[in-house]
Length: 385
Image 1 (cartoon, one colour):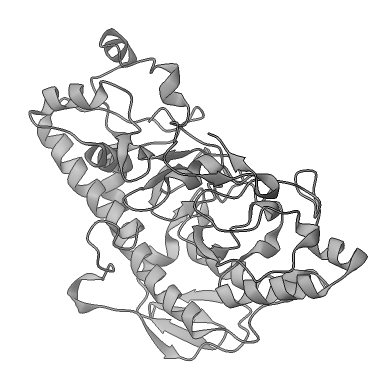
Image 2 (spheres, one colour):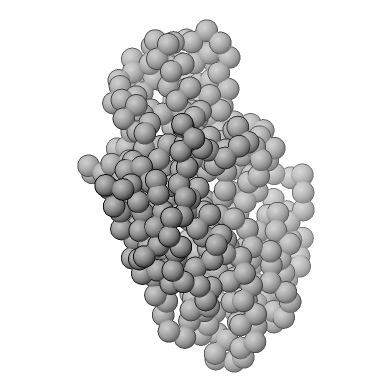
């Protein structure tokens, strides 16, 4: 997948929140401030200040006037993937984001999927590659930079982001047409981490390929919360996590009771929670603990981050129940996935070079030109791409 993009850099945490209402309240609070207070709440950086002039993000209808003159309503928040399995809301205003990677926004939307490489952490447990339908931030829990690789180079699922000639070579080897989604499925099942990025073995045996693709499709569907099937993932056997004791208004700790398969948020209690869900890690970090910390960490006094729900919202509990199901399903398949990642393929760099697949042409490493729509530049100017 030659075209890859570095992680986004938001620059200010107040433009992100687990719920959209919080973002609207923060926007209104910032507009109500004046002078030095308004600038301090904005949190200027080298990339963005209230006086910055920038283009609109592709696909977003936000003002391109300097933010210092802003007086309009809050832009409609959008869903983004903030770290592994943690979807939150973002103010999609380019004037507020240090490094937004507009090339990713141009190709976002169905049927696009983003493969997110996790930064290399020696000895860390968990998958090396995650897939999301939401626009990903792309940073791994350890803080090391990974890469974001869109499945398609153009909107609408056009032009697979795959090295030219690779899908044809795989089709000849396995006896059927191989498309971009099948390639991504194998990659999710078989990718393993390395200091130089993900490494993916290519098997000679068509049966091994088919088994890996079948597993990868299931993993993509679970990771994407039904991205392929269109239905929410569910545990087998009719099991389903329930709230056994109400989550308190402001829980401070999250612990796990292995004997009762219960997740405890102070006196709140959720079960059954399979141990695979509690122990599921990415980049060496436990996913459930990071998800909880992002919603309960104390904010700096006087900052916009202090604006948030007065009590734990019901929607967070619903999201937590869904997350438990996702992690339990992935954790149960992790030994199977790890076995594929440990396999060795017969196809090496020499064979791919001989076939003209490596190195991929320089143009395939860059974003495709998208000239079928207008984008507004700074101060309302028309932008040519």
